[in-house]
Image 1: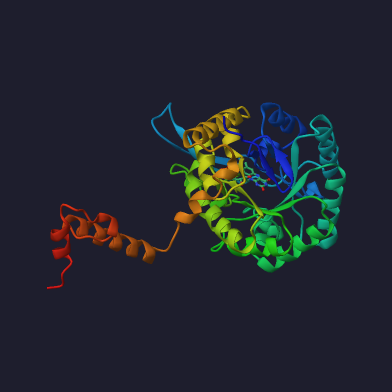
Image 2 (image 1 turned 60 degrees about the horizontal axis):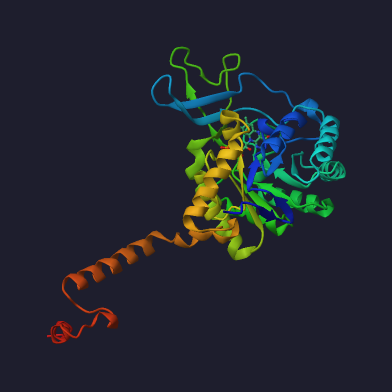
Length: 376
Ligand SMILES: Cc1cc2nc3c(=O)[nH]c(=O)nc-3n(C[C@H](O)[C@H](O)[C@H](O)COP(=O)(O)O)c2cc1C
């Protein structure tokens, strides 16, 4: 029977499945529900010191569906939701309550602030005093917050991101993960800046900036708020291939330059098999946000079942046994061409009965095989 437990940056999780920051971790009620159902850890909805600046709109989601009417599957999800609009003091109380109720479970605070050292230090110190187990720094929200130079605006500027990570790591007594934006050409660059400035781990990816569509009756883009919209963040199944690529890029860089640092993989996970792929590309934990909004908190049982079944089928006893295994199979296109040419040459030699390895010599065809190797 597979052992799904993982220890990441000293944090002990019963399984690698983590609630990703967003609506599924938006208050103590739902965080408690996640722990009851068996999630390995919860990353709370992102918070900041002054929630009065956070004003959400409705509608703020739009979905991409495929399939016949009545049996459609949701494949893509856009949101223009901001970070938490609940007061910071309320959050501090709720962190304390959750940790009192679930002292052995892992509660991670997702935090975001403006480019101000005192603000970042204050938010870290107050959250860690409330008992949270780790931090995730939100350098990645792609909409709304960048207008205040926060979120993805920070994540796209390696110098600013590095400085903020330095401030946070100067005061944090807990592990710190930096959450990356996918809205950048080379995700390894901000990841490297975070790790150089003391972060224990990287989380990737947040949502991909998108426009869900335009209503052909009203000619208004969606989701429409008073007739207008703003580009939002795309998540769910459709982003998984992009997330896998970006997780792979982070993992390869980290294995080379920062061995031992952790990677929390995110993007379109809804099954244990999806999660297994992220672990094969280097993820120590796997976060799920939109999947919980579609399927509910009970999804964790299905995720554990699917991952266990994969591990049993392959004979893997622990997550560490296969984490990062598939990274070795990425190479350059030029190398693929070379490999294919070599394989074809070997095939041709075999078809012509030409020996290419000493093990292929046989007593019966020895003379014939010798003749085939003669130059003229
Ligand atoms: C409605 C919604 C709200 C989100 N809010 C946050 C947030 O407050 N902080 C954050 O770091 N990520 C937030 N995210 C991003 C998710 O944590 C996750 O990175 C992204 O959605 C990709 O994963 P998924 O396909 O499992 O949802 C939000 C996502 C959604 C769909």
